[in-house]
Length: 308
Image (cartoon, rainbow, N blue to C red; front, side):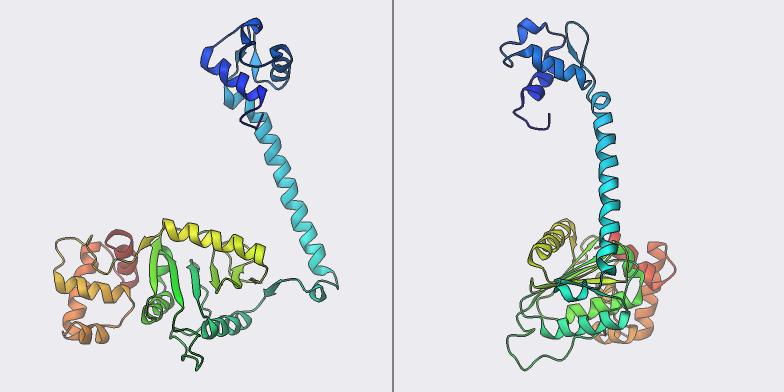
């Protein structure tokens, strides 16, 4: 009944559209309507005489429940087999193109190496809770001209993560890379980093932190790339114009807010905006009051959600 061109589905749709209909009047819909009606009755899709369609949610609920039960059993089976596979002494020697990083030190080392050697594409989803994976500043450029200089960097930040100062340091570091693109979204399914389409880092459990999986299998990578692209398309681009900010913010306020969201300190903001740190602090305090928040992190969170 799942195929659009099946006799069963075609007849069921006809009965929905036309109401109770005698079997002899269904010959133009399907061949051998009696046999098809018998199957539909047996599955609970058709009742009465003349036959009429039963409400779809009532007819399909048992099938949905059975499918959900089957899916739960399959998930449990996968979990049990995965554990058995990992406990096998042959697991590490099998050359599996997927490995686990169980400590923050391991993750940081791999992340730093990937950051230094990225050549073409850097795709990252950053969620809360935030897991610092490397220093906030971009690494020194390699002597190899193919590394880093032409790398296309795309990063999606979950808004909730923006309240973490370390996240803002990372955002500021990302902006320092030429051509980096940043977007925001309300919620992401998981953390994810994909580099040059050949390696990915993602938690073993969605919304988790450790252990992290390092994926180098082409089929698995294809799925992770598709996941990133889906989230990228849904996310909102970082708006440097802050055109949605309220009219109460003048041009100087908007310039300062842009720097605040980028994670800069008051001293740096004062230099960029040709003002004094005291004036910058006063304007930021006013913006916090306007947003109805009490901390800088809350202002960033509010601004990225409502003003950017």
